[in-house]
Length: 423
Ligand code: GDP
Ligand code: IMO
Ligand code: MG
Image (cartoon, rainbow, N blue to C red; front, side):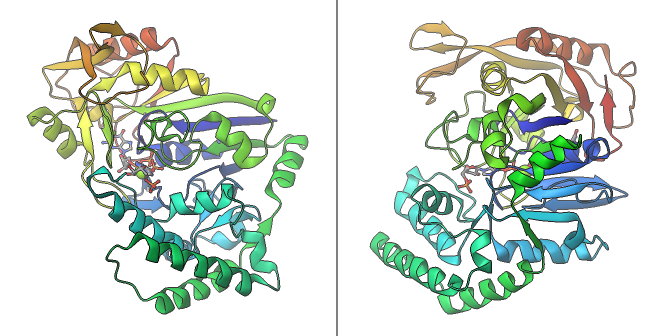
């Protein structure tokens, strides 16, 4: 019996989808534990790129079961499109995927509320993906939400109407200019709910605990990243779920003492999409080169991702909060060609040098302190063993391991499944 967790240590888009796909053959079950269609998890193999939203990234392996856990919020409309995309590749999602009855439903009005809330914030907006995530989790914790299991109940439509009407009044309250046709959105929603009903709904906590008793292995897949965690992230510029390790326990019904390895994945540099503080952000040619070479455009919204140097203060914090046991370093290939690389090891904060994330990390309070590392020229994308990697990269890796006190076990050198080096 094993439960391992895989989660992002930065602001999301670290490459979780790619690594879950690489690891899936070792697990019986892949289970998503939080987030919703704000996620875009990219997988590449056989020359084809797939972007998954709510479906776990183990779906391409026919011998594993994929579970959408209770901690996830699901939009039937996005899910229907995702299904259609996968069916094109002959992936029989209906037999490989099980959905928790306790996962919450994103209604069309949740999306509208997200848009209204962001519009009302003006410049202070979060930069939400506008998928209705915040309003859906608000209804969950406010004890008003509608869950997947409610679809099977006789009064589903009445419950829907009552909540949607309440949302309508809230949207009006925001008094912002939103163009929408709710009737059309509702038709689309109820058509998608019919499609969703063709899937199997389960009591996923029972399923997973039984699987553990039977000796099955489980990989829990996180979405977003630790710095977007609702409690520990750069609040309020965060998402609305616990993206950190504890979220896997509440999002799946797995007890903390069942968890074995915590795989923490990070980019060899840092990116962020949306608003909020980002101490090592670069506004120069170097940042622009990272964005270009790393193809740093959001997989959900297509927005340009902000880029900057690796921030070990933030990473150390994430390693600590998650209890990371193994590190996976992604996108090392993107750093080829820089003469010098900078790594942030401390912050100057109000005249003091600190090594932790302060409560208030607005740019005017925080100046990163960098050490410089020698870069490398070689193209890494065709390399397949640790030995082949340039000396300077090995030094970069060893430096990070020493600072974080956790070994880097995997180095990813390209988006394809095969471009993965096990150390
Ligand atoms: P996720 O949300 O954590 O699954 O990450 P995303 O899929 O949103 O973003 C990661 C992007 O980087 C995707 O386009 C991946 O195909 C790509 N990618 C993953 N690993 C590597 C890598 O090692 N090198 C390069 N160049 N691209 C990578
Ligand atoms: P994956 O799983 C990167 C960001 C948004 C915004 C903030 C709140 O692909 O790594 P939300 O829609 O949740 O209300 O947005 O969080 N965000 C992500 N950034 N990757 C993601 O997911 C993200 N999901 C949300 O850009 O700043
Ligand atoms: Mg992503």
